Image 1 (cartoon, rainbow, N blue to C red):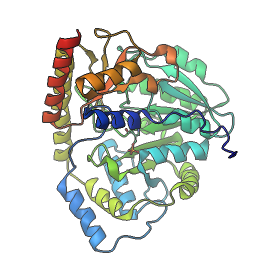
Image 2: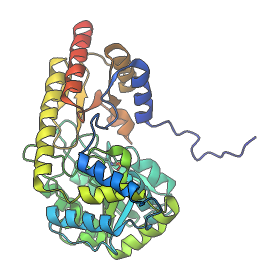
Image 3: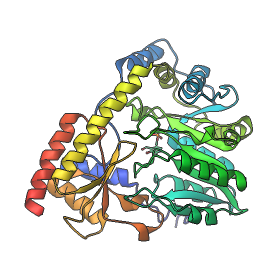
Length: 388
Ligand SMILES: Cc1ncc(COP(=O)(O)O)c(C=O)c1O
C-alpha cells in the first residue's frame, strides 16, 4: 500500500473547479468562478508578444524583474503615497495565491495562531494549517458587514502571529473603513502581530467606499505584508502575476521561501505587467465606471428574479440570499440552479471556517460582458417563473 499519509486525505477539490466543471457539463453561464469573459487591454498583450519575440524567454530573477518591481513601487506610491524600495522590499510571485502561500510558509510556525475574517478567500485557512498554524476566525456579520471588535480583541494573545485582512473582501464585498482599520492596526501593534493584507481588488470599490491599505496606518508599514496581483485590475487572471510589499526584514524571509516554491515567474508576462502598472488615471476611472454598470446590472437581474442581493462595497462579487426559492443547503441549491437555470454561482459555505454562521447565500460574479449578464438574467427570470 502506498504511504500517502493524511495530509491531503480529506481535502475537497476547490469549489471553483467543481462549479466550473459543472458549468461546462451543463452548458451554463459561469457566474461562479471570478474570471472575466473578456481580455484586458491590447497594449499589454503587444508588450508581452514583443518580449517573447525579442527573446525574453529564460528565467527571471527570483525576486522578480527589476522593471516590474519598480512599476509596483510606482503604482503603490501613486495611489497610496507610500514608498517601497523595489530592490529590497518588493517581490514578484506566481499570482497573489503564491504570494499568500509563501508568506504563510515563511512566517507561520507550529502552534502559531493566525486570525482570519469569516467568511474568507478559501486558500488562507488550508495554507496556514499546512504551515503548522492554528486558525482563529472572527465573523463578518451579513448583511450588515459589521465586525464585533470586542470579540476580535479576545482572539489576540501572545501566541498570535498574524492577522489576515482582505479588503475589498472576497466573498462578501466588504471594504474596511478607516475606523475599522485603525482598530485593527491598534490590536496588531499592541500584540506585536504581522498583518497580511490581500488587496487584489484594490481598484474595485464603489459608491463612497475607498480602498485604504493597512500598511499606511501609523506604525503598520514595518509589520504589514501587502499582497496584490494584476489579474483582476487588468483582466488577465490567467497570467498569474502577483507581488508583495513588505519591509526588508520580512521580505528576506518571503524571498527565502518563494525561491523554493516557484523560484521565478514567467518572464514575458512580467514585462507586460510592468507596462500595465504604468497606465494613467483614465484607465482606472473607466475600469471602475464599467464595473459599476456591471454591478447595477447584476443587482437588478438578481432582484427581478427573486433573489435578495446584498449590495457589495467592493470586488466583483454579489452575495444573494436564495431563501425565496429553497431552504436547502447552499451546495445543493447551487447545483440545482446550475442544472435547471443554466447559470452557475458559488455556495458561500465553502468560504466559512465556522459552518454554523452559514446562511442561504450564493456568490455571483459580475466580471462578465454586459451581454453575458443579460443572458444570465433571462435564464434566471425564466427559472424564477417556474420555481417561485
Ligand atoms: C481575495 C483573493 N485573493 C487572491 C486571489 C488570487 O489571486 P491570483 O489569481 O493573483 O493568484 C483571488 C482570486 O480570486 C482572490 O479573490
